[in-house]
Picture 1 (tube, one colour):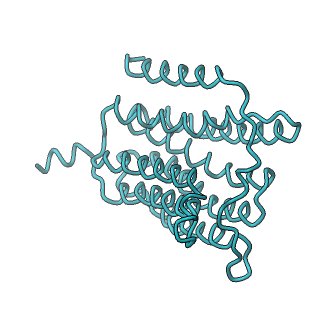
Picture 2 (cartoon, rainbow, N blue to C red):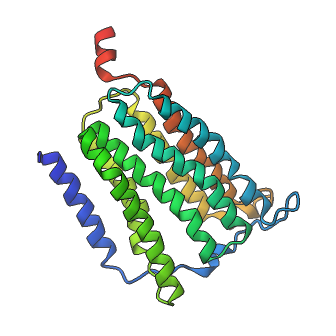
Length: 256
């Protein structure tokens, strides 16, 4: 393996080690108490439920785009991105189901699709920045491991000693790995900045998630969690946009 791969592996292992220096992190039950609990069109927690349609509006076209396979140097590269958009599509249903009745059991169905999306993007970047075969080989094991962290959290939580650390590694560790892949390894396609914009949008979405009540207190029009859904869907759309607009670096160079 070259030095950049070793740096990637070392940084990932260091992040896991640091997370496990902290004690187990149980799910805070207050998480389920969203600021905006108004019923809309007869739907409890209406805006939190309905805003998940944004994921569907991105996920379904994304699946279609990747299945057509246009724009990939290696047609196999489509599959991690297809898995990503499947995760986005399933998030629309899983998150809506959760917000209809927010509790630990329904939260599982919100987190599993998101986990699929995060780890599919990791596999996609490995495929196009390191090696296509390696990225494809890792796709299903990564997704399976990610789903396992959600199931592990649900089991430990139901037994009274919940631990979110494995799931946190899945979500935030995957973001770290994606940033490292973007920084350390050469791009085979143009528009790498779009990937960075997508990650930044998701970061801002998490800020709105954390400030749900504060945002709702300003005018009581919409909670921060609703804005989180919209920005997270926009983050996924930016990946869709990137795939539509980018070109192989070699083609751009030859046409310059």
